Length: 116
Image 1 (cartoon, rainbow, N blue to C red):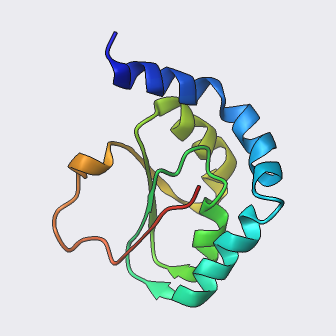
Image 2: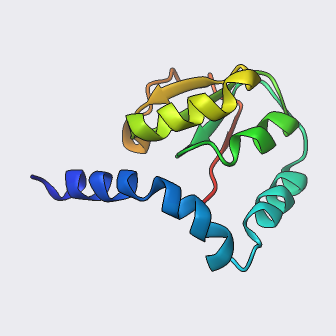
């Protein structure tokens, strides 16, 4: 087994724990920090890309500032499955890929964001 697969397995095994612990380890500033960043960027138009969307915690916030379609990208099919279940009502697209090899034509994405 390669090191990458070990990392992937570890990340997928902690989805529920990560979401429960993330607010605590950020001193309950996680959503506040995400919203503050989006306020600085302001409203966006065009195609949005959420990098490392994971289980979809940040997705609804991005939908609030984006006038256009949003694509959530993550390497993990399990993470994307959770994100789809949570954010299906937002009409979001989901793509399994890695940052190092984005499956999009140049210039198609107008806005990209990612959050922990």
